[in-house]
Image (tube, rainbow, N blue to C red; front, side, top):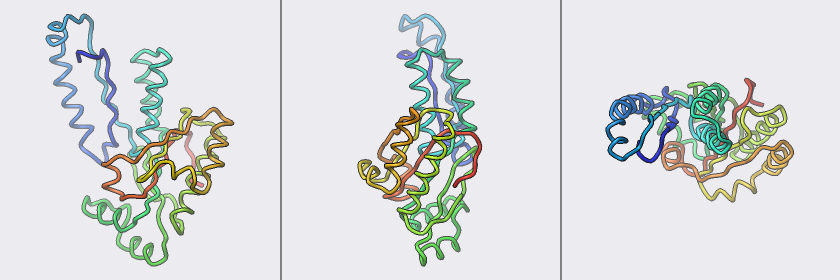
Length: 234
């Protein structure tokens, strides 16, 4: 509240975590107390703090954060940025391709999450069939099943290519990987994704998967996020 005049706090979907509710409570406390602190620091003017439910997880949050940074660099006002990000929350899709189905199943069952049940885990383990999971508008669940991790990653990339060619709501595709991010560039379908992004003015942002995400989905998993008009995964 002293170093900045306005802060945006993007949280994981509130259907999966109490972080959004807790951040809202903390924000109210800060907003009610900031005047004294800023006055003591010799700072005039109000302080703004916006807590926004991203309605997604993993790289979906990264897409929204990247758009905020882009707008700040372009000189957008806090109200313009807030309106824009709230529009994106309905359009953001985050996909996850797990490498270790056992890890995802165990973590999900502990949290009471039924997106991967015992039957899915058992059959998937026997036949190397894995679900592609999607987080969108506070809902998380499987959108496809594939045999093998690489086949799943290729489908993720091809789906993103189709969305890029149709036109994204924000010029970013964000990818996180539970390993060396450079390895992503050697995965099947990535070359086509990179080509489509270059042709359409879309930036691909890579990162190591966050510690929190990796703990829940296991090492070697890959997440991909973008913001687009409503569509079916293909």
